[in-house]
Length: 553
Image (cartoon, rainbow, N blue to C red):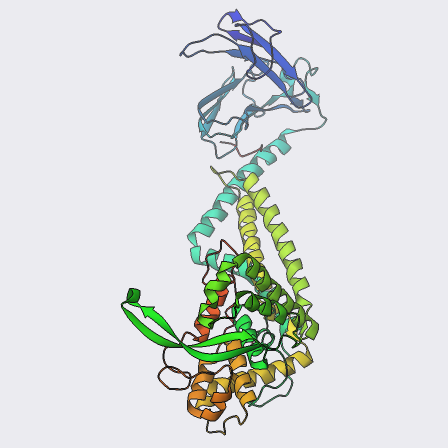
């Protein structure tokens, strides 16, 4: 190897470290098993300089019986910048004359360039070579032009037929890639439909199969439209999750549990009215309210009722503790009460699991699908993007990227499916039977204000109506029924119904609008730093049943 600038030969022995120091007009060589690097040093201002790098390859030429094949990558794909113009020449050992074995190719086919030959040399010229793009220069000439094969690889047999086939195959592959990409672009609707099928079809098939085997509810034979009383003694915090097919409670279940504790005597309540300012204090109105006090503290509590009692006990002062003020008081210790609310949700989930209402199994299949499609997406996208040629995309790379995106879409769909428990988990026979009865009871609470049936005869049943109505998110419908059907003498004995300032049963402006109270608890119980407004808590809802190579230029 040597370096020259015009007639000046540079001296060897300098540092070969990139960016290292060396005297001008010197060069160094770094050798390893993978590369040989030449680093030369010079002094220059803002000027154009031309250097000549000379080196000798051994074993590059391949000598067959008929031809010598010299295939040289004259421009590598490591360059981070493009090249405006490239010229390379290759001189045969002797003039080849008129010989059919004297051939020249430039590749890859997507680089703009031309090749030519004469008796003195073969020439390659390329223009606007992109960054990270190699250029190869291949020449064959008759074997008899070599006086010695000492510096070449020697292979027996004729090589030209295989070389011609290789170059033809590369050119055909390039043309075939272009045709297939052009065909996909010229039929956009067909392409989009195919991508949609590949992007959603497998996930839908897997999700459908999982639902059929693991999520589809089995019929029980229950055919009643209404249940006129709670069908079981199940606590109100647990019932919505059974009906909604979920296991994550929220502020609605918290509120229902509080009213159930009032109903059962853990807290006592007194109907009062509260003066509420409006329009910045320009107007005032009286609203119905409940004043709470600690009741029977010896009453046994379930594990999930205890955190609710802890929250309420922490805000009771023993003097004029009105329910309308609880939100602000809860927020005063948001950190502690948020932890209690988290404990409430966990304990409710544990209690639901202990009931044995749900038969799991499908989530495992969904998880395997997520893992498989996720790995496919990573592998296909990485290989497709890594080998992608922006100047002339290969069809195989386009397909890999498209399939990788489809696999990613399937992964996202399965992740979404994993959040929908009814898809991969069904109720057990006992759980389904109880859920259908509770759903019939929920329909009854929704419809009974307009039903021509005898109203509940006992105060306990009326109060249970309201508690479960709060849990189902339809407390207003229960209150509407109470307006129409609840005897006043029963109301006067109740701890959770109230008379509004207008004299009507539970009507008029009220600080105890259940939906407002529930969302207020949700906001107050949110962890510190959250946006409030009940963010992060379920609303309870209304229930529901459910390179090298290339062609010649």
